[in-house]
Structure formats: C-alpha cells, structure tokens
Image (tube, rainbow, N blue to C red; front, side, top):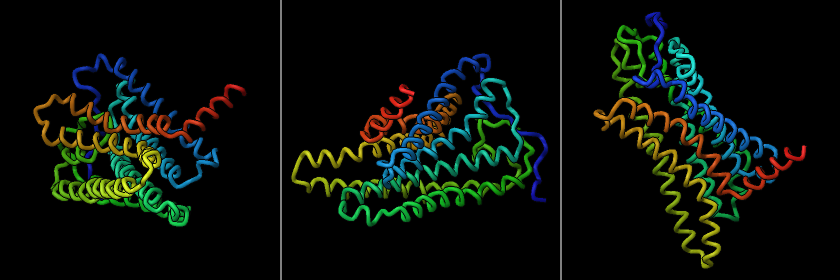
Length: 311
C-alpha cells in the first residue's frame, strides 16, 4: 500500500513546560512574522515597480525575498496555531508536505546565495562583459536550476515517509514538521533516510559555501589590483550586503547543526529556539540588510513611502 501509516495525526509541540505562557511568547513571534512578510513583500514590489532595479543583481535579490516569504508562510501558520489556539494536530500528508517545502526552500536559499556570489564575481572581475554574460535568459536559467535542485533533491527522502508505519509516539519536537523529526517516529528501516540527508547537505550547503568562498577570493584578488583606493572601496561596498546575508544564513545553519550534533545535554528549549532562529532570522534580516546597505533600494523605499504619504 502507498499509504501504510497509522491514522492517528502527529502532534506538534510549542515550548514544553511553558504552555501557560504561549500567548505571551506568541507576541514577538507574530511581530517577526508580520515584519518578514512586510519587508520581503516591499522588496519584491519595488524591484518589480522600479525599472532601474531590473538588473541581474536585483532579480537574484527578488528570488531571495520570494524564498524567504515562502519559508515563513510554510512554517509560521502551524507555529501560530500552536501558540494561539493550542492546535497541535497535523495530518500525515500535511506534515510531510510541510517538511518537504521547508527543506527544499532551505536548499533553494543556499542556491540563490550562490547565484548572487556569481553575479558579484562577474560584476567585479569582468565588468565590461557583465551585461553580455548575465543576460535575462541566463538569469532565468540559473533561477530555474536553483529551484529544480531544491525541490527535486528532497523528493527521495520525503516519499518514503508516506509508506512508513508509525507505531511509536506521534509527538513531534517542534511546532512544524521536519524530516529528521518524522523519520524517528517510523517503525521501519530508515537507513536511507538517515544517510541521504547527510550526502545532500555535503553536495549542497558545503559545496555552495566552498564556491562562494572561492568566488570572494577571486574578487578580493581583483579588487586588490585596482590602483585607486576609492574604487577599491566602491567595488567591495557592492558586496557587503551579499556577504552579510551569506553570514546570517550559514552561521544559523552551522549553529543549528552544532546544537543537534553536539548539544545533546543542552536543554530541549535551546534546540527549539535555535530552530526558530534558523527559520526566522535570515528572512527577517535580509530585507533590513539590503535596505541599509544598498542605496538604490533605499531610494526606492523612500520614494514608495513618500508617494503613499502624498496619496
């Protein structure tokens, strides 16, 4: 049978031992949720509306904002349901789909950051060929490749979840579904589901980080060869926003990985908090970083709000 799972739904978990304070805990979560939605929606709108931002750098930024929006919209409804309404039940199908989108979008975000590094490399190392290399068609192909890599690579570990029998506890450790959480509840051989994610992380996150670091080594080599100090500073300044987003994303990935691998004795609430930091901090910070560090984005935001104030 394709669906060979027990009928009992999974149970999501908020903050164990702090159930009485869930309504208070929900206040900062809801504030961050709204901030993420507003910040990334505004970014997408101004990139679409301002024709001066119709360049490869900003197309990749739009992909990043869209990915952040989707991650937040995938995770936060169940989180808020648990904190506000104590609605813990989630069907198997909905849980598996949520896990699929959460993990797929994480790989997509890593791929977008890699594409943005490639954009900065071309812009600084071969500026005269920038427009001829990064054509709209190539940007579309890169975007499609990043999306396909993310969503296709998660199919193999998610599909078995549908036919695994679940005869153990149905209680999950978070207010959203993660593959590693669900597979531990299965009463079946989960060897493939244990090994595949390790290989996948090595071939995506680690490989992406390596290529990003290598691209910035080449960028630094090129920048150091520029005679004018002012021009060197100007070239590096165009990379600050991207470097900041890369650090925000991968530091949270590394932090979460270390907590899961080496923090066995850490309180369970620490694991939970790190998971929320991983899913909420990058989508929250990325619009702020680009709004502060990118003058074109600043001008577009000021223009947008001044137009609304006059309307």
